[in-house]
Length: 183
Image (cartoon, rainbow, N blue to C red; front, side, top):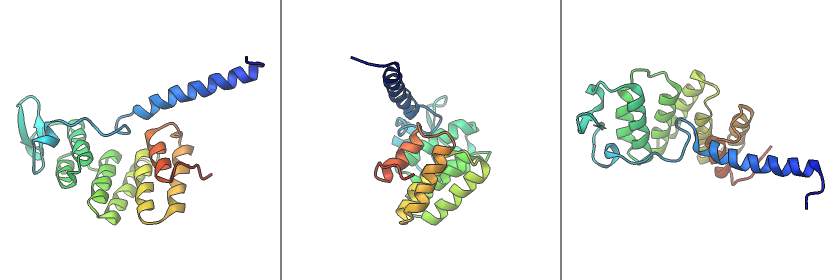
């Protein structure tokens, strides 16, 4: 039996945090689990992406598709481990200074083994938008790969302080740090 109003409020808050936290984990433009595979990552090669209207793989640079479609295709390719293809698709995006584009340039380069180049793109993404917490998360993971644990912890704190504690970005970096809050 619950003996006090305070205990009831605490239980309700914990349950709300759990439910909202799960929603936040799955919410967001590009902060969710890996994207669903489409024909872009299963059939298209060499910087081509699936054009639903034409029902074929098309050259991303010549496709005329908008930046959102190109971004989603590049993200899909990056998560599929096709880093060079992802970079080719990112080349077709009109807004090359967008934080999300710079971030995925960082991700694709880092995952392809070019960590320093990846780090430079994460830094540029944060110059474009210092509150872009996904770039902070990926940067933190890159810092861990370089053995820079304290700098990765600093990125975790930045994510938290920018309101991202219930986000995928926060949880992914926290998990990379061993699941322990370090502040």
